[in-house]
Image 1 (cartoon, rainbow, N blue to C red):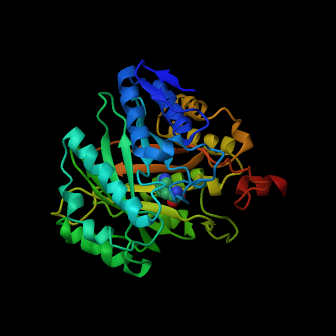
Image 2 (spheres, rainbow, N blue to C red):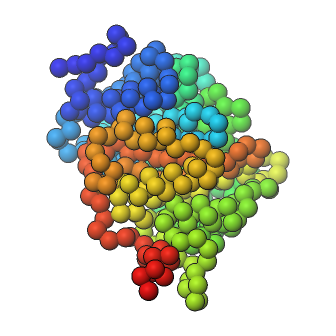
Image 3 (spheres, helix red, strand yellow):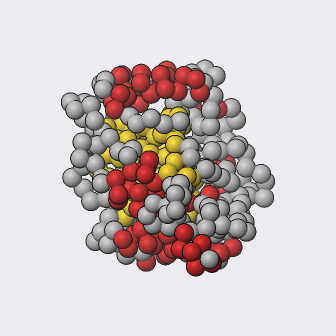
Length: 388
Ligand code: TRP
């Protein structure tokens, strides 16, 4: 059975991968106030990106072990907030999902991006310059190509492409990032980066951007709030204390440094990530810095994750009601009944703009992670003191 939306697009059955995720997308578009026509075109794009796997019943196992989300769904939503504006809705996709090998996955991803470029009339020149680096014949690693679409009013999304620096092996990842920056004319960018465990993604803004960015995402194992506060390399970046506060609230760590010689707590489960965005080649410095906290590994359940997201939004003068609506648009489950619906919380600083708080929302097409029984981090200081 198929449902119809906006009179045009036939939606696959809700028990299929495409049917599940496209319904989430349609409902999110509605809460974001997008028109029926925009919603219909974005729904059609999502189904097109999924291709044949859209029809795959969800009671079959995931066709590949996508690293895009914990349950291997090839789709993740996010909402990005600044004060006094409706949040912008984005969707992260793996267009080559289910293509078989990683090499095929990458080829399918490139075809999708090039088809999008023809349709929306943008250049892929920056991506073309990197093709041999990121798409070797026998690629390795956790992904080949992901694509994020920012679902603006008007039906034409802004496009971001994510590539895997470890495509030619983890030991080549650092050199691959350096070489990619060089080819794109950012000769000083690599030297500007902070120390990290490894680069995870290189991302390009393609299409209609005022200032297209080249971004690198770095993983930081066992990071503390103080260390997070020192990661930005922007010329006039965020005050370290602001980043430290974000880190502590997102991770559920009591405010302020530890007392009685307590060490600053470290996030020893999934690594925190930082992203450094380069928009010009003159200074050699990034014009953007983002910190991503994988809240799902540091919270018992999504109710707790939502409480933290709400505190962060309100702390930035942002109304959290659209986030609650968005969560109800993607799932009917109680937030306390699982963890990982909210995957990451991030704060992005870009020169000359107010900070943006983003919340990454999983599709949970294949699996809901059960709540954690015990708090995943040492109890917050306040609780320890209260408990004696
Ligand atoms: N699932 C991967 C991870 O958790 C990649 C990923 C998906 C990601 N969405 C993200 C990484 C948002 C950072 C921010 O690392």
